[in-house]
Length: 311
Length: 130
Image (cartoon, rainbow over the protein chains, first blue to last red):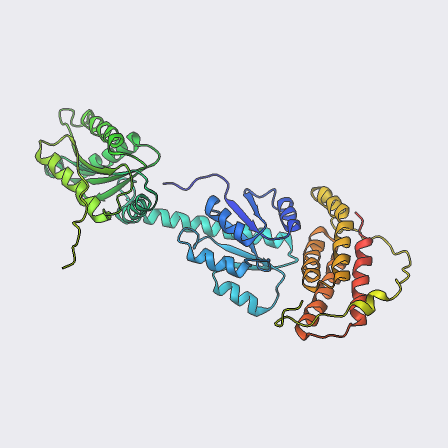
């Protein structure tokens, strides 16, 4: 998923309303969206909700102080890498060392010079953007532009966890181009690459914004359909299948490329089905599609693990 | 302040019972950012809120609420600098340091310096203008 070009969100966590008021004025000409929080506890809730690009954090707050916030941010998988600029009246080196050891990215002492704060904020945002680009590129398949296998593993685990924890519907489809080896052997690997890239483009064009398409390997694409029942999934899969089958290849107009698709899904929580078992169910359905004549969509069945009865 | 783990309370009574000092009319304290149009509205808000700040500081003083007094002073220190009242910020910072020292030392005896500092701080607050 490309990095959004919307304004980065800066979350300010400070118990002083004056600090929020001053920062809103002093940062109003920066291309950022400011979100304010008056306590450490609320700040963590806001951070989860808005996923900021940077957090400006006061240390000396009643209740959950800045050190406590830093600890909890670093323990949160979603927020651990959000850069934190500490704004604090604490000038002791020990406090600064403690803040950096807890993961703070920068430290500005109050009362702060606003020009300096603005410069540090811009620098942090620039670095954050570069790191996000790097992370994004590390998870994108170069040929197809889809998520790569590493991204699939991460996303698939997260969605299965969400299914188990929240009972969200989930369906996984495995799509494999038919006779792909023959395409490579007959027309050469560059043609094979073109077919793959075109197929990926078709998939992107037919899926919804909530679907996650990944190049699983070779000529196989995995499609994670979040909050989607098997009945809804077959509609998406069929669209992809039909679209590829109808594609006319300009240099080889007489040639047709088709895809076999197997999918396995659940309407509600399936706590006994882990990521591997679910993937196996979709793969088995794909196998059945291949052996049932190819160019078709076949539903799989999620199998639960057998009960272990103690002797 | 009856918790055995806390510092013994400071006896403000002797200080509070003393007659109020006689202040000469001091010059107004102006913001260094008075000419910055972006800051006009919030500086005016800071000035309008100043009587309320003074009231809270004084209430904490009379009630011997050292922790609350320290927190309010800390906030005043930070805010003053941001609104362009450096002298006020420095005075609040000095008073905060004194409060921190008193708290850490656990002294029982009232310090004349504490009252003088507090009154100086309140006097500066009363001088804040745009």
